[in-house]
Image (tube, rainbow, N blue to C red; front, side, top):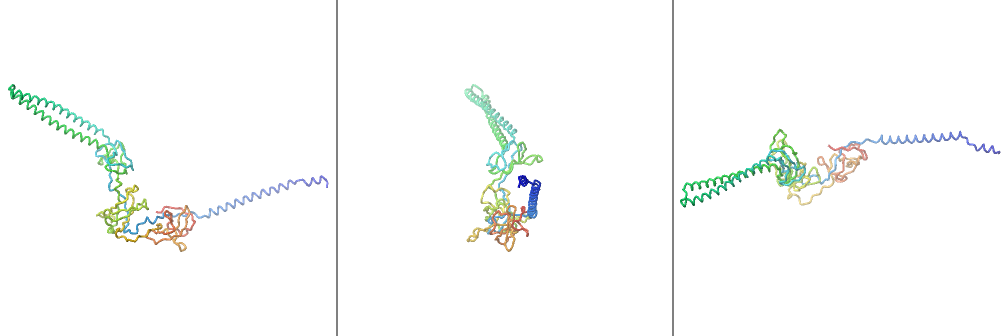
Amino acid sequence: MTQPDLLGQLRIERGNASDESDSRGAGRWIALVLVLLMAAAAAWWFYGRAPAALPVKTASAVAASSAAPSNSVLDASGYVVARRQATVSAKITGKVREVLIEEGMRVEQGQILATLDDMDQQADVNLRQAQLDSARSQAAEIEAQLRQARNDYRRQQELTARKLTPASQLDAARASSDAFTARLNSQRRQIDVAVKSLEMSQVSLNDTIIRAPFAGVVIAKAAQPGEMISPISAGGGFTRTGIGTIVDMDSLEVEVDVNEAFIGRVAAKMPVEATLNAYPDWHIPGAVVAVIPAADRTKATVRVRVSLLEKDQRIVPDMGVRVAFLEARESAPAAPKAVAKGVIVPANAVVERDGQLSVFVVDGEIARRRGVEASAAQGSQRNVLDGLNPGDSVILDPPADLVDGNRVTREAAK
């Protein structure tokens, strides 16, 4: 084979190579489009077919120990009240100059709470003091005149004894001495009146200083500097009647309204257990102070006073309280009682699924089914002995189609 023939075999056919390259590029684009379509279809299937979040109502499981004691003979609700509470005001009407209290402040007996403008009272004190000083000056002048009159009287006695002066001059000297003595006594009484008047003015001046009548905590601040204050309501609502309200926290107790049909179960000195609504796991021992001998005909209740045997800063006036009236200690059985265990949940949170008692617990946004062991329902509550922990959020009235793993939207229970 000649050299030109060999060179002809080695020549590249450019037209055929270009066609093969175009076909390969088109194939890659078609594959890429197919992958994107498959990804979009998968996303649509996952998100489009996924069930929407189911709105549910929830409640928190509460430790069974926070329920009423087993030896409770009666349960009632009431409020924390203070037996010693005062809205402090001034004894006089005046303009507030300074207020030294704030809500939540602890004050001691006699501590200054506020001051009033004392310009008028101070001026009156100064006037009374000047009157007293004037009365004392006049008394000193009369004393000097009395000494002179007594000296004249003694000299007249000597002269009369020597027959050097007539008896009339002796009588005149005696009368002058007696007159100055009477004037001095009268002036001393004027001094006493001036002293009493000054004391009254000082009392009025002291009334411009408002002090705490007892130790306690300020729960309300009612006046500001520049406002008028008066012990009586006046001024068409523009005059304050108090500076603030103080509560003696050591005098806190509980008042409950007991239905008159059950008041026979309550007696003085009866032990109780109080539970604040704000602290359901804290049980405060107490005792019945008195059953108020008067009924409320509109509510058919009788008011009962209960003392708290524990003092704590968490207890504040007007807090809601649940009170369990207990059996007398001496009548309680000697054998120890079983300690309550598990948690308390609303009865409508426990359902039967596949022949087993179950509850649904909200975990984030997912409902998780749990098999539980529960006692019989007691009213609107049920004691779950096993399967739940205090604080778990359970679903109330779980729908029949709710299953483990469903997405839910949690709402507060009404």
